[in-house]
Amino acid sequence: DANFSLLMMTLLHTVLALVLSWTGLSSVLYIFSTGLFTVVALWTARLLLRHAWYTHKLSCFSKPQTRSWLLGHLGKMQSTEEGLQRVDDLVQTYKHSCCWFLGPFYHLVRLFHPDYVKPLLMAPASITVKDELIYHNLQPWLGNSVLISNGEVWSRKRRLLTPAFHFDILKSYIAVFNSSAKTMHDKWCRLVAEGKTNLEMFDHVTLMTLDSLLKCAFSYDSNCQQSSSEYVSAIVELSDLIIERREKNILHHWDWIYWKTRQGERFKQALNTVHRFTRDVVEKRRTLLNQQRETEAQSEIAPTAQKRKDFVDILLLTKDEDGQGLTDEEMQAEANTFMFAGHDTTASAICWTLYNLARHEHYQEKCRQEVMDLIEGRDGQEIQEDLSNLPFTTMCIKESLRLHSPVQAVTRSYTQDMVLPGNRTVPAGTICLVSIYGTHHNPTVWTNPHEYDPQRFDPSNKKSQTSHAFIPFSSGPRNCIGQKFAMVELRVVVALTLLRFRLTPGVNPELGSSRVRRLPQLVLRAEGGLWLQLEPLNTPT
Image (tube, rainbow, N blue to C red):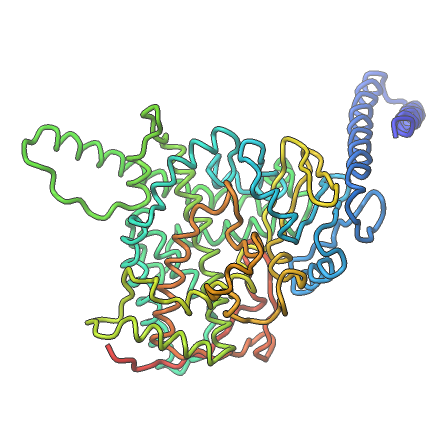
């Protein structure tokens, strides 16, 4: 490769000299052009040498057929139903892992077996790095938040954020979930009364989860389920633009190109709206908190009972071991991350759970009876803190998270070589793509993996379940910090929906049938939406 690069540089210089001599251009331009060609040639040589090195180091992993040595598997990762079916083929063929090259730029190991996934996800956070392939595009929005940061910066933020997800805090959010779900269900009842019984779930449920998160994060009632909100519209647009940037054009991965495009301009505008909103909330809340402290310090009267603390309140009050809290910039990053990571993933999980129960009437009815037994004798149709009394509903939710996991994969890289079973080693710096979808659908791990069977999660069967076979929230030190929050909201919304409506598969107007084609983007969605038929129920209160 070194000789090849030297030969290419010599040829380029010769051609350039001939062209400039023929055109009569000045020697100054020749020197400048020669320097530019030298830089490009050296960069190309380095890229090719790096590609050859990774190709050799990853030869211990099976490699699916490539387009060429240089292009690798570029263009073969598709965010479509066919792309998921291709993952099924990879799992069937390679059982546990394979290597994958996106041109000479990105070198990956794809893993889809618990024995290979576990060492990577359980590795110490000190050697684990969030790679740039997936997370770089999120940085303008989420800053150096707990989702993206690494090393000691990540460790400090994780410690500061953990109290915000304590179960005692989550219990105070249950009333919010009840309220937001009721708003959505009232809207459904009005639509059904107008004859619109066939509804697309993602549009409605995403607005409901955004409504909930705004109340839990900022104590802000956006009324976004009833009318448009500039902030909510900006969040939806940012999510769509991130998907488009990642999947449509590889040149958009480079910032200096992307920010000059029309999409880049739209991203900046939406970003300004989101950051302005979050900044204003944090500044006002910090000022209010300082005023309350001054008032309490000057008064001899004991402080009155405070309102329920939201996410921003908790972040403002939390301190590290040195007595230092989060800066305003850090607060904004974490609040933006809470909104980004919490709304789409939870909405996807709720929608697919309702879809699976709509397709399996006997499971749906068993869940409904469990919910009715839970609220029997209560004044209103509300789910309270006794969520542990919904064991079968929880089993159905977990099976849906396995079959239709909202996040299809997580990526990691490591600062040192990682040893895996079978004498395989992942060299430092390699991107490890942990396929949640592949692991959840691996026939060597799950019997009939494409069938919906909630009994897999019967507590009596838990001992037979392989460690790291079920990882919808990832695992290890860098797992999803909001997984308990998500599970509480999931159980409340699913339970209330089954209490108030009977669900059956709907008809997708684009396809003209009830057939569903999965659409793996930032989260798992469905082409043309996920449609269900709703029948209101007159359940006793």
